[in-house]
Length: 379
Image (cartoon, rainbow, N blue to C red; front, side, top):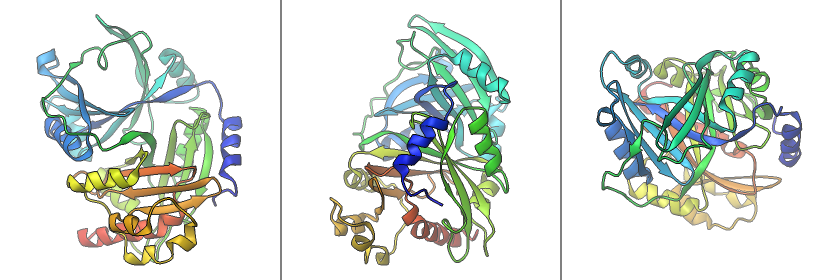
């Protein structure tokens, strides 16, 4: 159940979260894809990301190629294997395009590795120093759910475009941005009975605390259900909701994801904007497809959420959802999957005081997803 006061909840999280792993923010998110060049073009054209850096055969990397894009504080890395000998080839075969790395910006990557491994994390990358003419970066990493990993990035002695091994890149094609500012949260899907296991991992291994919990009474429709807990570090900069399936009459979106992704993984990336009306208008004009919300959702919206700055008819025309907590309200909308498999999607969110996650929208959202599942024949 959602707590009565999320303001008090955040205070409790700060008190409960341990300070052995201070995280400054999300450094970047890396997706392993089948074709990095085309994926980069898509995220530039559709979402307004800009060229930042490149690594590949031209920079001496023979096994893989990466394009780095940026918008606001968001950095996306699109990486593809260059041959079947690359370890990334199997990742694409199993999962399709999906998130492999959630990189966290830290002051001390060596200490972050030592502290988390001492608390039970499985090592992914021992502390490693990489350097070039622009300085040095220290990287380390641990495994989390499925094949997803957290890299710890220490970059205060580095002034290059991105990381050593990358060169500045400009394709000559720079569509305007769409107002995306930073990553608000990232959601992981895990298998039956695994939610508490991974919430315990984030609490005990990384010092996070539970912010909110939703059970199958909160997140359900006539056919499907799921459970979710939101884990947050002490600053609140990093928030990781963890979802697992719950018993329902039909196959839930979490079960569908796990089936097509081939196991647990990142379900969606929520990106923040200061003006969701302008952002969604721009995204729709560029061909981004969103989940459809029925007209009936807007019939009593004013009664449910109270006074808001936006015009209801404008929100209705764009199918934007609204929810309120005791701190304010938020506006949100979810894309359809941005890859061929019904796996990863993007959430657009604007917070006007609200610190919650749109509990009041769950039923409408999940019914929309079920309509898509029905079209795919996977419900």
